[in-house]
Length: 488
Image 1 (cartoon, rainbow, N blue to C red):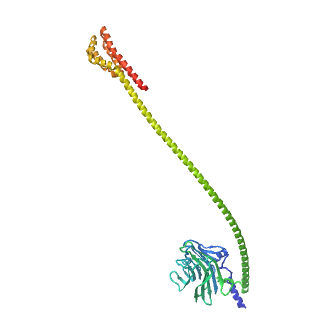
Image 2 (image 1 turned 90 degrees about the vertical axis):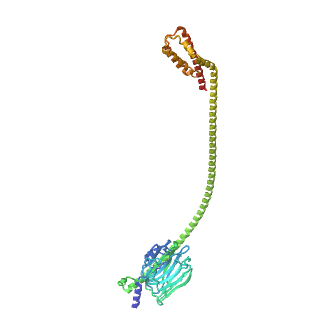
């Protein structure tokens, strides 16, 4: 009796807990985080644990915080591989003496002691399951002695999730690996003559060169072989000091009380979960109703929006057409105005040309009239001019000699010579310009004549006045002609 009590105390003193390392839907994220060491971008949700997210070269790993010490056991891992076209990388399930470290073997270190079960998608057409027992060598460099493989087609197409079963029978020293895909169970690997000491349970994954592959674990459960129901996982107690403080009876009582409390807690949790499920279902139904209503409203609003868009488009088209017509009319009016302005400019230029031509014609007519008038004047005075020229040229010297015979004083014939020069200046074409000059010159010459006879003065004045009268007459005529030209 005492021996049985001691055995019971030893069994109960190993911190027996239910579902410490096991989890299934609905998952309690805080329990998983509390009982596992996680490294990398792992995310825990209520329905799965995402080991690796999308992205090239993403890898991570998770390890149980306690060693599993079961003689014969069954481990069931339900997982799901999500990828678009071709999956990459792979996932590893580890039963090792020590916790996983970071490395290049499916996200973990390639030197380990224990068993590694790998699901490989990298560089293969059909996924492969490999089982490797290692005693601490580098697997990437040296192939271990115990190396087994099997194919696992269509794992990535199983939407409900595939199940990896790991069974160990301690009496037969046999390890059995099975895989269930699309609810079809298949034998994969059987390894005999193998010992599995207490181990740390670990999961790792990497998506390799694929940026659209993610690995998700939906559930992880431990069973003890020989029991139909799920057994409590016995964790190897590292600190044995708890056995010293109490007797086996008290330990057994405490253990049984803890078991009862745990069962009651589990029942309460199940009830609470059921209530939460019911509430969630109700919320889902309400949300579905609201979504349907929202969908209906959104459809109606979309119809209204499409109708409004059509109306707006038609209005915009009409406005655009009206604007285009207005712009076209404005452009045409501007063109017409520009054409009218251009025509006016052309007409003005032509009118200016006509005015210039008329002015030139008037100038030509005026010049012709002036020339005709001068010619008529010239014809009128031509006989007199000719007569005077003859008198001036033929009889100039004789008349002058007669004229100056009565001059008493004429030193060195100075007065005669000056008078001759004055008479030579009198020309018909320059009479108007020379009249005043001749008159002043004659006044100067008059001083030189101091002793002229009385009888000869009459002849002198007659000869002197005749050319003066003629000169003034022709000067008056020429000035009148210039005034006429000026007024024209």
